[in-house]
Image 1 (spheres, helix red, strand yellow):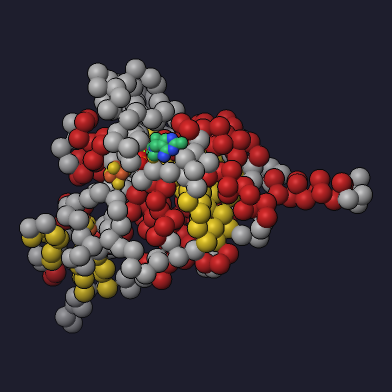
Image 2 (cartoon, rainbow over the protein chains, first blue to last red):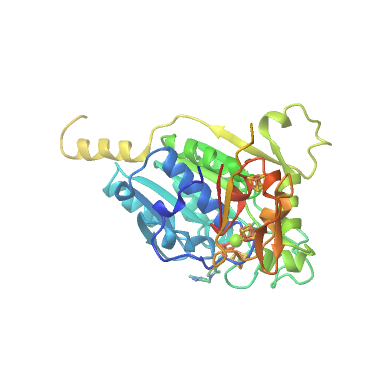
Length: 273
Length: 64
Ligand SMILES: Cc1ncc(C[n+]2csc(CCOP(=O)(O)OP(=O)(O)O)c2C)c(N)n1
Ligand code: SF4
Ligand code: SF4
Ligand code: SF4
Ligand SMILES: [Mg+2]
């Protein structure tokens, strides 16, 4: 049977605003399939975003949604989760939103290990505003603000998340569409702060400037650079040059923030010492 | 026994003509007709669902 996405979408919102071949739509579909797999209820699922093309995602979803300020999705989502810990809270956004203006919120949400899932669509650029470089733009790449090539090294979002304390970290790509829902499903099931980085494409502001002739070339790049963690174990460092690992990269059990905070309340009210 | 053919529905008003479904169909079932995707060779479809999974625009539905 064809999958019924309409069930989870606000009626009359399609076609969405994303450009032809933009991977954000592929990620949204993966997220919907994960919601469906877990049987999450709309009234019990909050989807929170900042600003950017990727951050437009909640507007299409027939769930509890919150489109907030640039880079601040984690702060708003923390408020939602603290007030309603029984809700499933999903954060969505782009690489610019999450690692530039929102970098601080991102690392501290990781550190706190609050139980939510952050889906970061990394297209290596500020798509919405016309292609300025982001902290995830590769060295040497062209952006509207680096016409002679970007001198900065890029963040490894997954390593950043692990270093900051996230307890579940996974990576997929927009090309590997059938893996996206599986990663998000596991991320939601994990109790703690889960980060799912999806390597994505922005043909409009990144592809054009960086000699990708088409959406297909961008998709083929994602196909070629991705190496599943299991396969990587059997590969030499030379073979892994220029590749990125995909799958579940890190998982650990640690005390979760809402539960820890509930204990603080209990102590303050003179309960358990 | 004759094999059952799938139904492939392409919602033209959603299709943005990105070529993803056409390019990555393993058996070359689809083609571009002007700016939208279209079914060229339904017989060849192996019902892998990859086109439906990858279409960024919710424009393809495959009923196996
Ligand atoms: C406080 C503030 N600063 C700057 C902007 C302008 N702005 C809007 S979206 C964006 C970057 C979005 O990039 P990213 O998060 O990677 O999303 P994409 O568009 O690539 O999906 C910027 C800088 C803003 N809206 N608010
Ligand atoms: S500008 Fe880039 S990120 Fe934004 S919708 Fe277009 S392709 Fe996607
Ligand atoms: S289901 Fe698979 S074989 Fe059939 S048209 Fe789609 S991609 Fe091609
Ligand atoms: S993948 Fe979707 S939007 Fe792209 S050409 Fe095919 S049907 Fe159209
Ligand atoms: Mg971006």
